[in-house]
Length: 259
Image 1 (cartoon, rainbow, N blue to C red):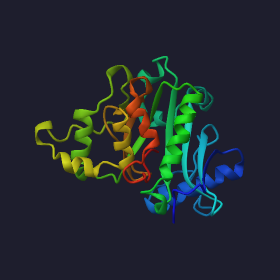
Image 2 (cartoon, rainbow, N blue to C red):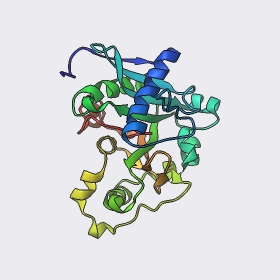
Image 3 (cartoon, rainbow, N blue to C red):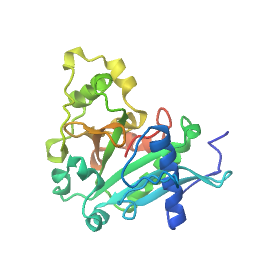
Image 4 (tube, one colour):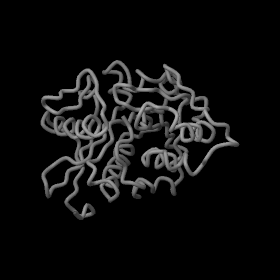
């Protein structure tokens, strides 16, 4: 498969069929592949869905040679969150510093690709579309819940500690986990930095290279079988070199990263 071909196209979901295609792909990745769940998951229909879907915009990556959706991203602006009653991440994190900042916010979530499209240029197309959306809506701050697979903190100690020691968000924008799992698990002087980087999902590392940072504390999500951190990216602090990462390839083409 040559996933760098012109067969890729990114669109916003416009119909109920488009949304179902996104939910079906999310089921394949988050439920079937990673063992996640949730009260609204429809196992019979093979759909991963929640009450927020109707409020989000959904970016769909199409492989036109298959006429199939092979990657998705969902996006929630501040005005859409007002209609929903909250941001999705507020179930896990206190976002009061973000929401009280007066900045234009965009919450990112449910990013995933089918396994055979990871490691190539597929994520390039989604990220390029995301960059255009950010510019069109004059977004100031991107944020969202990003996931490590599994709920056992032990194997993630180095990665979480690296994030805590080196990448905490500024106080004025810092989310705080509502059910607080400390991330300061290994002293900075004892970090195994290579292991920390290897254990950090590719999409999280890509956002760190953009200048992203994380909230205070992790959140254990047993429904999704994940350990979550809240990523924050202030677009005003991105220099031009960092902005160009939107047009670069994340290390693994990014499997599931942001919920």
